[in-house]
Length: 231
Image (tube, rainbow, N blue to C red):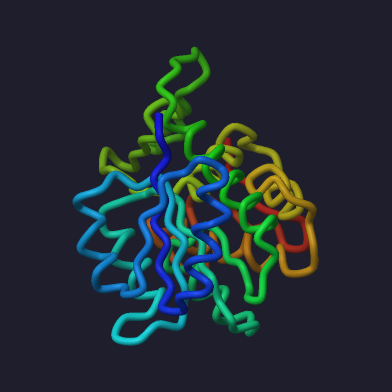
């Protein structure tokens, strides 16, 4: 089955470079220099992943990511020339799964795309297994269909958010360190900024689960250690 990737960057040279390297991996690339035009395409084309530049006129990448997340859960990677930590956190909070800072290595970009696609495919491959459903109190997760519900209401999660919540539920009662979460979910070596990445996704999960601020019911913080879900 072909893989469709959306690339949006108003810098033609960057967009063309991304397209070149991803086409070499036999992906179908839908390239736009305008976020407005790209937005029109998301209801017409079944995308498997999006790569969005942050700094674009009329509509920036953050807003485009937010629009995508209103309907779709395919992975989103942000391309940003900014190095401030808050810009990265903003993208993750709005539903991005990863970010790459310009200038970037095209080979690293390809590796990150493949990692996100593997994770997304794993949760949508439709292979039924006996341990593919987890139930913790009123939270139910189905790994096969990538569906999640809380209090009988659908919980719309990105593949990254689903991965984090699944690991915590699967190991309920145990404290899972930020380092372990990052390595298992992102498949990369833990580094100094990784803790902030995990923390932002945990916060986003709590917001979607409507957890009481300061006293979450499901995802507990064990300060200096990590996170856990009680049995």
